[in-house]
Length: 123
Image (cartoon, rainbow, N blue to C red; front, side, top):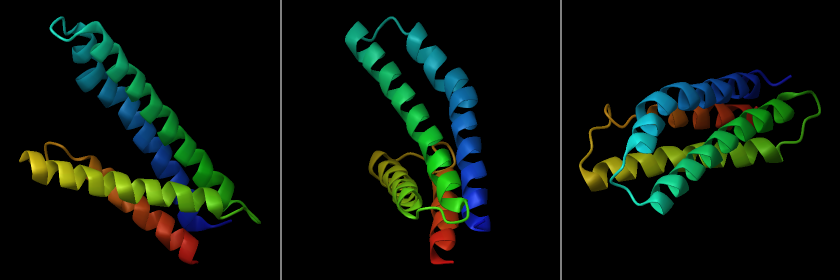
């Protein structure tokens, strides 16, 4: 069993739970309570939030499948690439929009995940 990919699987699941619990409380509840947004915008954003939840769970599964003895590397390659792209996108958005990295910290979750995935793929 690949230790780095196993840890990446657990960390991905933790990120998914953070997304569900904290994201649900801090992002989704206020979004759904907002009466100023057009309905189509509100429900599209809510649907996208669910897509992210599914993607994060899928990344955990991808790392787990790849971590198993004889596991295929391709799912971990995809999950690692996704984690790196998500981290870079968040950093780029923060810079472009003048947001503080501590206030908009998703990169702090995805960068270590990408590192774990890369280490596991390298082993």
